[in-house]
Amino acid sequence: MIYNTKYQLFEQENLCSLLLPLGTLILEGMEASQQNAVGGGNKGRFKSICVFCGSRHGNRTSFSEAALDLGKKLVERKIDLVYGGGSVGLMGLISKTVFDGGCNVLGVIPTALLPSEISGETIGEVKTVADMHERKSEMAKNADAFIALPGGYGTMEELLEMVAWSQLGIHGKPVGILNVDGYYNDLLALFKKGVEEGFIEDSASQIVVSADNAEDLIRKMEERMGEKRMRETSKKRKRS
Ligand SMILES: C/C(=C\CNc1ncnc2c1ncn2[C@@H]1O[C@H](COP(=O)(O)O)[C@@H](O)[C@H]1O)CO
Image (tube, rainbow, N blue to C red):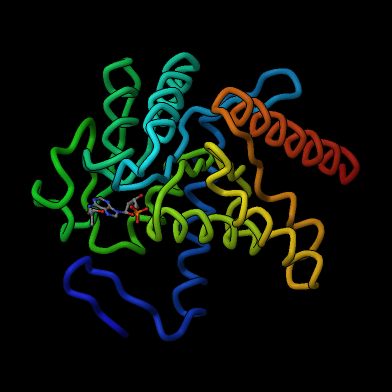
């Protein structure tokens, strides 16, 4: 096991030994969480969304505006926020907006990041966890869907892990990219290249939903969830 004392990051040498118990954990959480998601028409409605975003503001004001706008859209739809805890960067903007708007905010933060000089003041409900892996599984367990705002390595890693978990069937929740000012164009192009070059299955290219504004993104993700529910219902009907 490789251990980094600063951020309590570690890499598991044996991926399988991590993945199997983790899969069970996430599936259990997924069932509980999906029971919380209220269905409506042919759309899925989310009770809570986990947002991954930068611990910095980035260089464009549009990034901060997008974080505030996403926060407002969550409040309008009475969707609770799950996020990485703390008040630095875009994380601080969205958590404050959702909290001030009267929705629940759950911050999941590793003990190593708890000191306020690292993560700023925490907001809403705070769950402390041992490390970054536990944080991700806890965030995944408590949310019905995932959205990535612009961010750095941390955000990208969290986003890609949720995409990979979806591909492996560890969860079946929509994963959305809020492509503010084309920030994620190159990543989306890389996903496309992965399909063209035979590394990503065509069906798996459907995992990620993207839009350049929060309103469209949430609507697309709800539609995706609704389609999935309808497929599952019709499968169940065929079986019985
Ligand atoms: C090093 C910096 C801030 C450290 N404070 C953080 N507090 C809470 N969570 C953090 C922090 N830094 C990274 N994270 C996690 O990664 C994601 C954002 O990382 P990114 O690299 O900024 O995209 C975030 O979702 C957290 O889970 C000052 O940069």
